[in-house]
Length: 496
Ligand code: BGC
Image (tube, rainbow, N blue to C red; front, side):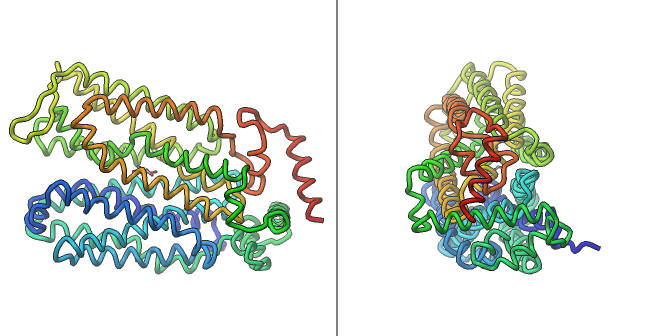
């Protein structure tokens, strides 16, 4: 029987468990902080302090992502993932036993650092072990885990609010360490990235891993041979042409590619998905949707379920659709849905609720409320099948090996920086520009569709080693097979 640890789906799927930790982090903002138990125990933190407690997490993620390139190159993708998961256990423990805000914040920063690292290293590892035909699918599995994490944490928090005393928040914070335990215990059994091994000069081990994963253990399997040759040639080329590994990132061609990776991750945040992930309860409250808080929580919870379910089509089809059409159509779709939400909300009567001091809108009739809810679900569904996975697939596949870890770490850090920014700004914008918020993000979606159309080449179906030619080519035109073959041969010749 084929060993499970050499099955590509098992390898990619196991590493993706880290996505659940990521999702727990995103989800941990919403449920707990509204409960009476939390508010009483932490002495009713005011908005600024609560903002700081929330932000501690994404700030940690930013730092973690930024620093992850070095250990991923030095100590391997696999060990970095194990180390980061161990960190998550420590962070969750601090949070679960927190006796006040300082310890809570320390725990959140530690968890953030861990998620920052894993969010960078998992897509990197997955794309380096995957055959090109299903690379998108394997990386999408991590996005799927993220959506599961967000959904599970929301519903755990929902259930825990009924538990009396501090257990209402200690339980969710302790439970979040479960996936981290699984990763720390099990990841040892899985192989190193063959590309990392090759880069370290451990060619024999790299060949063995490639043979196990792609050739049923047969080193002479044609696909294994092709891949080995490609990786060897790419490494040789890198060594001969590239002077200083990391300094290369600033060379003209590569700097532009890094810029595209960073922009893509920023655009992923500017889709506005986290307006919904963090503040959907608040949005539904503002728009008077649902008769009770209970009903609103349930309607909000449904958006997390939609997110999980609608990531499945991406897992199944993303490698067929191609990266460009998926991102362009996804962004245009999201733009339309957000524009409609903004449009409907603009027709209502906006005023200040005298009890809470917050803005509310009275819509003219119930069908308008239904329209808002429907558009929010459609928006989430579109993100889930398109930009959710693509935000992680694309940056992890476009860089040459010598700078891949560093470049992915930069683009991931950009994602977390904007995540942090939105966390703060969105509630302010909801109060200040009301429905304009949705129109603003609709405009961002339109712009990103344009940017993808103009600048981002299709990467579906190429090996990681072929990305150099992909990026030398006109992004709006397909590379004809002859040019590709000629380039591959030249690269091979260079090696000889
Ligand atoms: C994004 C997160 C977002 C999540 C929603 C991820 O790809 O990076 O910011 O909350 O998707 O599913």
